[in-house]
Length: 385
Image 1 (cartoon, rainbow, N blue to C red):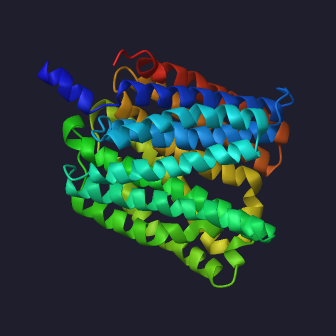
Image 2 (image 1 turned 180 degrees about the horizontal axis):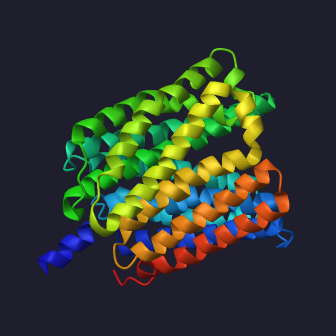
């Protein structure tokens, strides 16, 4: 009985884990649907509706909620339990709302409620970290600061739109949110890996990881203009973001090295695959830091999609899946990595000039990722906890 209780405390609880798993399967199905649309097999749903439902559900429903399930499985305070229940309601509301209407006053209101709810969750999460090991606690608290900081992009966007600001300013505000929230997921995942390391038999160089976390914390937030055409050339902010993109090479190498050697046995290949995807995101950030908007133009939309999928589908998702459910998930996660390789190869083929072949290859990869996801989420979706 005692051992079973420990298992419950160190894995996602039923409601959080199941909702996160369902969000992942639903969101990746939309990813397949978008690839089908691009291949000439229309779904009848506006593409921007699919895109917003896909991205918001992965951010709030899979990444954030999944990490919440790993790290805050038993909130004690009544107000925090209420906030977590609010998150569980908001996630499906975002999915349905964006799929039905795209950006609309209703979905904007739901997104605003989601952000306000996450403020409460972040406060409660922070207060639950005292018993977490020091380096894991450092990563998690910096991640929560990035979570709160990312919301400034949302409020800045509202102010820019209210004052008829430029399209560039609006896009910069959007990317400030996307990048900040994305780094929250990275920091929280690193904290979760460190927190679970002793139990799972993973070995991290604590000193090197602390140095990596501190460098990321100081520099990563500056890089949001690098995702926007013209952003790297904005006066003052642009050169700072380009320098930050190059500086991030150093902590990126430290983290890849730490992750590469952290696991032994069956987990080793999964860790190394995720490390390779993180290395790709670090290199592409540095490339834009070096070349500016010309690098964004060379990669086009496909380059942005490759970067985001390498980070969130290649790095965050497989490791979060290991943390949430370690039963019989290694083989489907290897298939997941293979599917992502095929998908990004297809996007590369599109970028270099063969849209038809590349689009079908990307669709095959996306379908593989979704089918693998059905398999590795199965224990979460049907858990009785």
